[in-house]
Amino acid sequence: MAKQHVEVYVGHPNGTRFACPECGQEYGVYDHLATRVWRHLDSCQFLTYLHASPPRISCPEHGVRQARLPWAEEGSRFTHLFEVLAIDLLQAANVKRAAQILRISWDQAWHLMERAVLRGRAGKESALPRKIGIDEKAIAKGHQYMTLVCDLDAATVQYIGEGRTEESLAAYFTAFSQEQRAKIEAISLDMWPAYINACKAQVPQAETKMVFDRFHIMQHVGNGVDRVRKQEHKALLEQGDNTLTRSKYLWLYNAENMPVAARDKFDQIKHGNLKTARAWALKESLREMWSYHSMGWAKRFWQRWYFWATHSRLAPMIERPN
Image 1 (spheres, rainbow, N blue to C red):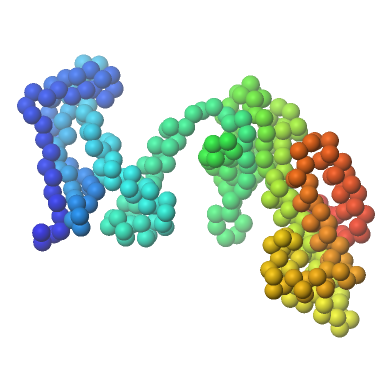
Image 2: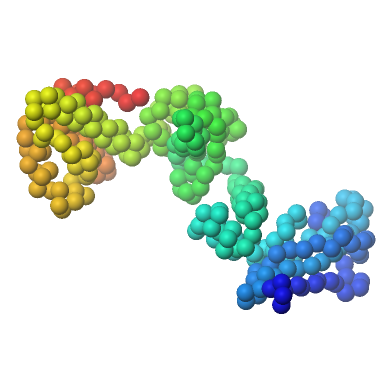
């Protein structure tokens, strides 16, 4: 009561036989290891611990081995049930807060996550997904990135590589045979040249399988609209015209997401003879491309939009993204 603990001591009857963890053959107990302790699910408000001396068997083929324990994995200081609770909580909260709720240390919480990741990786099939997504992820200040490859059907991360270079992505593909890579049906990625080059070099017929995802395309177009606004706003201010003042985010909204309070102001300025309004119209028109289900009609739409954009005399909308 003083420690707010429940201590459970586990043993086994004399003559109990245990299976070899390698071959499954059962043998009598060879000896016991020193007593170990595992954290279990709390009993009401009390921290609960299991105490046991793990038995070992002597297998003629595999030597002296520790028998598997039904409540915990080898090397863990937590029971299976506690690890399940901990992982669920770590998915719902940050490490610090989850550790506080579980009443474990920050290091112990990280150790539980590492074990979960190892279990997940061990359970993954080695087959190459048919549809993959490739993206970069900023991991620190100073333009430090990692490369992520995902299985789009299973919604799982398949690979993490350092940096966002051609080599960091190529390392994923080279782990598979040429025949396996040929079975890839689609690759979703942004327009980063290093990723495009890696796909072309490693995936047969990559040109017909690469799909530039909608998010990055619209992000590039949105950046072009913002650059047009900046240039025009500067020119207008020099003439004493503040039409575009505090309008940055209005041009970046989708038409249906425009806040009600801002619609009147936006309707006034978008119908003016502004370069920014033309750039915004280009952005909004491009969104229609994803409503097509026919390759032929989508291609016709793209050709018309491309001609309009390249003849708009709006340099930021014409320039190729970096």
